[in-house]
Every structure is written in structure tokens, then in C-alpha cells.
Amino acid sequence: MLQQALDFLKSHNEVAFATCSEGSPKIRIFQIMKQENTTLYFATSAEKAVYKELKANPNVEVLAFAGKISVRCSGIVSFNVDDETKRWIYDNNPVLSRLYKNYDKLAYFSLPIAELDYYNLEPTPPLFKHIDLVEGTESFGFVGERFKSTNQ
Image (cartoon, rainbow, N blue to C red; front, side, top):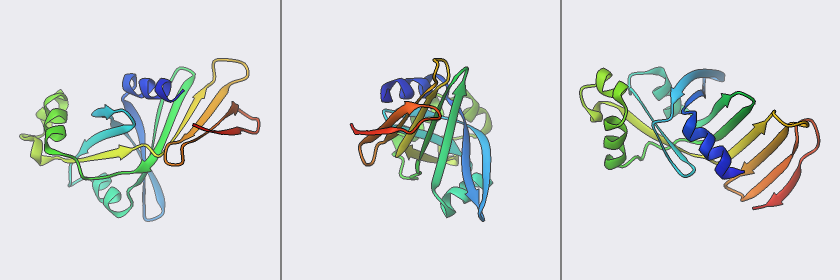
């Protein structure tokens, strides 16, 4: 189920991206610029509010949704992104080169996924799986029922 959720993220890279500013939630549409296994990469301007929000509180959630499937991920962002990854992101996203003259004009960050929820509303009853990648546990069941936990 983890790989299925990660594959879903790869094919649905525009996500709702939630931060918090002064105790209030802030949601915007963001694009996953790169994905390496369970780490998602993003880019923004250091002049934007989202950058300041992430610096003040690096806890985020992202949500991808299409049809009857949704994947929600949470974790703590890191601004430690290597130069090779920054260049790859800039070179492989045509929008960035139209907005910024050079790759080093952007602020890059990654989201190592700590927790992931996978919902599939297609079957009856709808399926749910929660994966805690930090603790190595999974909870699964049907939407609306008590979930069962297992170790991965």
C-alpha cells in the first residue's frame, strides 16, 4: 500500500500544501518538484510568505486527491537540499526558468514523509491505511470503523 500511495503522488504532483502562521492554517496549491522514495522536494521564493512560515514552523501536511483516492502526508521540512538536486529541479521544471533567472535564486526544501494516509473510496466499504514511517507501524481498515494496527 505504501508503494501504491507513492506512485499516486508521482502521478498527481499538484498538492494542497498546508502550513501554519501565527496559529492559523494556510493552504495553497504547490507542485512536488521531485520525489525520491518517501522524500518530496519543493521550491519557492525566499521572498514569499510560505518560506517565512516554513522557517517559523517547519511542520506541514500535503494532500493529493484525484477521483476517489486521496493521499495525505505530513512531516517536517528540511532546507538542506544538495546543489545537484537543486539544479535538477530547476532544469526539469519549465515554469521555474520562466520565473527565475538562475536556480540559486530559489529556496529549495524537502519533506521526508513521517506519516501517510491513503484513502480509497472506490470499494464498498471504502478503504483506509495509515502508515507511520518513523515508528514503522500501519493502521488499516474501512472508513468509519476502528482501525487495526500492525508493525511493518
